[in-house]
Image (cartoon, rainbow, N blue to C red; front, side):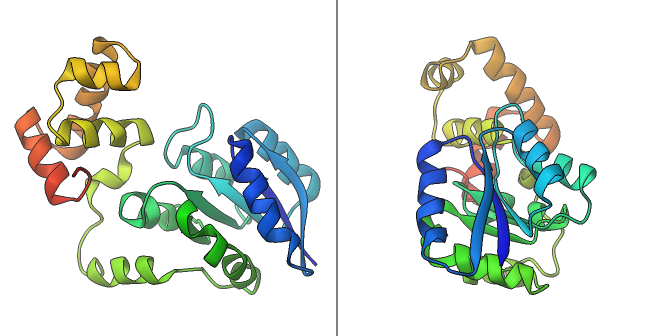
Length: 208
């Protein structure tokens, strides 16, 4: 019997995952968590075969949660469940030791397959991720893989042509916070202006 822990701060997502898993006689859920601290406690208690881990838990943006899980439990296998497409985080997640990466839009089709494949000792790479890896096999990973989800949101909004005040209003944060995030983004991407950021976002497919 395969044991899993579900870690996602959205109850509806956890319920959706549980619905998928209940149809599988060979998989059982030993715990669920809405934050990283509870997730780590469940892993320590149950040593599950797989953690189905949301890419953005409260207080841990981007791949920080995965990094902490792997630091505390280096042998723990984790399948990342993300609202972000493979281009943004998948390669970075695999580099940090994730055993698989699935978007929430594809979870029903891929989750059970991923769990079983990971327990069998393989890394789960879906069709879109395989295509991305093939395209980037001879290229260094793009710097936007290091952006947190909030930073990626701001890149998308600025890339779509929003001014800083509009971005702040859209996200419900202060203008100074947006500027702080923007400065971090500039450092991570090696950019120095909004115009350069817009060009980068459009070229990388981070904004429409």
